[in-house]
Image (cartoon, rainbow, N blue to C red; front, side, top):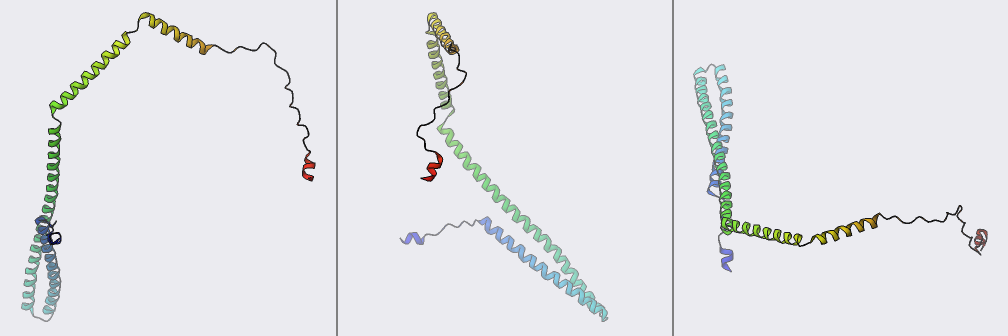
Length: 200
């Protein structure tokens, strides 16, 4: 019973999944760094204006040099983010390719097993047996069709003609003349009048 609960579960997270996660985390950190640098650039530019207004040109120049250096860092950061995203896409696409290859491998193994069960020789044997059975049936049909004599054929034609004549014979027309007027049906005797029925 201890084995049931003590067994380690096999993790579904692959090494590729871990690598993708780490790359995405690095990308997110670089983006946070970009935001921080961008905010710093705006502050330093505003401070350089104030220093120029106060006549402190050298200090303003120093700040602008620092700002320029940080802008170059931003460009490098953007390139690194692009590289990370490309790497993530490459890994994810490779994972898809691996699944496709795995599917092809399983399909190929299945086909090979089916081919082992049903070889070309087996299929040819079955086709030959089927052809023989069809030929045998055709021979039986020919024998049965050829067993009727000419007299049998004539008797069949006479019977067919007789059936056709029976269907074409019309019923006889009556010779008596038809009555001119149809007699009315006699009224029902002792039928109570409607008034009497209502009164009772």
